[in-house]
Image (cartoon, rainbow, N blue to C red):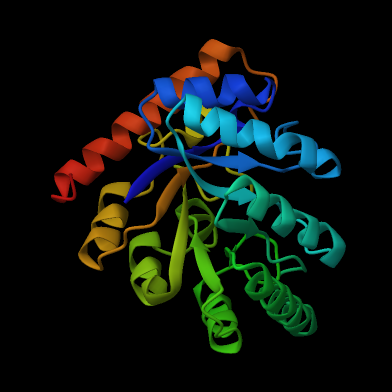
Length: 265
């Protein structure tokens, strides 16, 4: 497994600050945030100027470019994201499922949209991943399985996030085992309680919440998963650099301990 962190944790700072402190925390790689409103890292409207800088920073800080997060399913936005990914050397793009929970028609629209975007991903030679998201059309394991059955392209994968599955009222360890065959990316963070939101950034740090992340990583290891495990902490844009760095380092230590506990490192 490759341990990384999403640069959105450092969304209040420039991209080099994110790369520098993610490297200092000991991560193997980075997921570059293209999330408008949460960061100004990979800005898609100026991606041609940003792409060389991403490659330079990855080399300078010895971080593998593991993924990009870009939540919109707008075809034009996603095509720009795919172009930016190819030019930057990013192999995988994560987006949200869209729609609203509980509505069968919205779920079908989401599945159809993801299918079309996956065809575009095939043309660009990149992988598109989607995760179950609280409140969205794909919001738990049963709806994830429906998506998996409908979109069979090798350019598509599941992005598995234990915090969303936990807040959907499920056991993330059991849920992971049900979908592991199609998991190509993991967004990892902890969560205290089953409320809709993930909580304050410090409570999203691995080890601070209620999720059995040791068991979760054990399932990944037992099934031979060798892809990215990227920390995704949201809501820290107004935090100090020290606060963000502490969250990154604390979570990296917990991730390493989980890997060691199951014999993966």
